[in-house]
Amino acid sequence: MNTAVIDVSELPAAVEDHTSPIWWGNLFLLFIETTMFALVVGTYFYLRMNFTHWPPVRSDVALYKTDPKLGFATANLLVLIVSCVPMFIVDRACLRMDLRKVQLGMTAMVLIGLVTVALRFFEFSGLKFRWDDNAYSAVVWTMLGMHLLHLITGTAENLLMTVWVWLKGFDIRHARDVRVGAVYWYWIAGIWIPLYAIVYFGPRWL
Image (cartoon, rainbow, N blue to C red; front, side, top):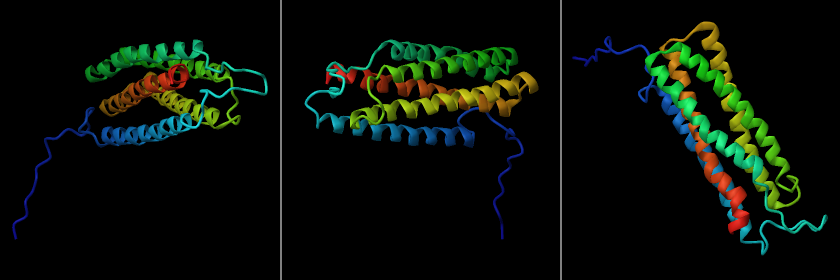
C-alpha cells in the first residue's frame, strides 16, 4: 500500500506571524474576552431601561449629579492610545530581529503599563459609587475591574519579556512571543475605547 508523504524538511522551525499556532490561540482568546465584555455591556444597557434617571441618584448623600468624572479616565484613554505607537515599533523591530530597539521599547511599555494601572485606581474614585451601592455601580465597577485585570496581565507579560530580552537576548521564538503580546496590547487599548464611551459618556448621552 502506497502512503503519501509530505516533505516538511524545508519548513522553518519557528515563525513569527499568523502561521504560528500560538498566534491563533491568542486571537481566539481575545474573541472570548471580547464576548465577556459584550455581556457586561449588554447588562449595562438592560439596566438603563429600568431607571428613569441615569446614573441613579445617591439619596444617602443628596447627590443628584452622579456622572463619573472624566479627568483620570480620559488621561488613561489617551495613554493607552499613544502606547500603541511604541508597541508597534517593538512589533516591527521583532521582524528585523533588532534586539536593542526591542529592549528599549519593551522597557517603555512596562513603564506605560504601570502608569495605566495607577490611573485606573484613580478612576475608581471618580465613579461616585461603591461597587455594591446598586446594580449600576456593580456593572460599571465590573467593566473597569475586568479591564484592569487585562492591564495588569498585559503589563506583567511585557515585564517578563523585557527581563528576558535584557538578560538572555532573543531568538525567533521569543520575537514571536513579543509579537503575540503586542496583539494583546492592541486589543487592550482598542477595547477600552468603546468601554470608555459607555461608562463615561453613556450617563451624559443616554
